[in-house]
Length: 280
Image 1 (cartoon, rainbow, N blue to C red):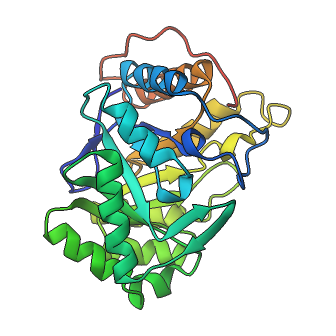
Image 2: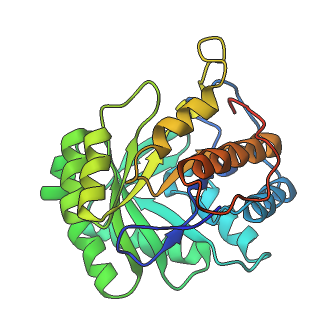
Image 3: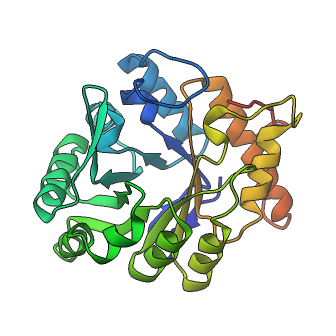
């Protein structure tokens, strides 16, 4: 897949990113089926496949259980130039989420993410919103703390994984990137995507495939239809989708490649066979 500029950050990301919640957490999640955490061998094989298919973006967070720590350990075994998105503000321990947006907690979280991931600087750090987006951006200590660490060279790009339209629009104004929900069932945050595009800011899409809740009985081709909806918006930098199933990963990439080639017929096609379809 052809890499896309992430706003004005200088980072280039694949149109499809790999979410890694399932690498580290299987409690308190809202997927349609329960699952076991993958072994290191299974996770590494999935990372290898993602890279070979053209994915260079990984999404993680302290709230994803062991995800950051496992990624750091696994990525040391395959030295590749991944773009890694992580977050601050939310923790998940003993099956319960908690939030802390203080300057001290923000700095401690960044220091820990640097150690866990084994990097000298974090590519992108998003505020992991508790739903009170505007208060977090305008009153809490988290954004000034992140901007200070960005100035110090610890972080390349700062943003928010927002939960409201107003918060997303404010994040476009004061951050480098924004992560929003946009899918067949939830299209309310489209103004944020378009505002970010107009401002030259990066946009990540979360829950683009409805966290696996796509229903082929309602739509016989739900992945294709979902990605067509999302990629029709030129402001979208990358869609983050998580899976542990190699067949689903390959099928999703093939579908994305097919759609992007249709939207940009002048660009060379990828070396993929016709897309397999899956709601995974």
